[in-house]
Image 1 (spheres, helix red, strand yellow):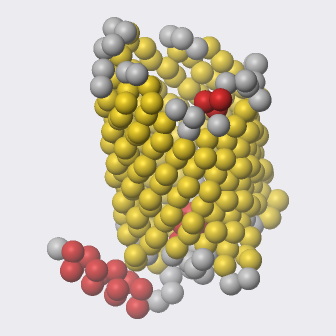
Image 2: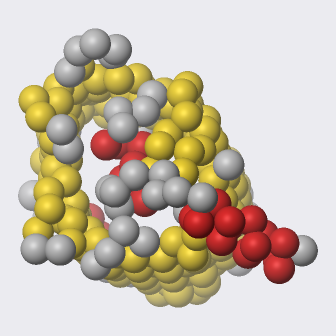
Length: 257
């Protein structure tokens, strides 16, 4: 079976410099090394999918950025299940990204539902997060977006304004993705920076940093990732995230069709 997939992928690359796809699915496994008394470790399993309203053509751009550079509107979904000693969580995400035709405007809306069962404290809790954005693309490869996020849960009630930007630029014989984001909450301001260097069209290395002006140290995050496309439709991504009280190591296998 693997030989057939490899043969089909090779034929697709030989038939021309472009490859079109309209959907992507992924499976991810993560391992958490934690210092919490009730969660010394955790394992998470995730499935995600994305459907594009029109086929996305991969041309001379980095394969990982083809959809964004094509301004491809899409519908996304993700399911995450995490298990740890005395703890289980379920997370569901759905969203829509819409690039308005014949214009430079962009709309984004996301919904997230999170449910946690804590056996140690005998507590069940849930949380809902709504996000909406409007963006503008003044030039190819550049997006500036602003929006609003609202969180409603058993132990939290928060509203915040959001701002983010994304820019893809050529550099020497490579490509560089630069991202920045900020969330202005009712009490704290959260901010982050991220960059991905595409050494070629199929391989990238990235780093991201998140923090806030809060006195709590657990807001600080450092994330590293490496992603490789073995063919136009098969990719593998390795991740390492470092937080104040735990570390996360993960791998995601993606398939486009």
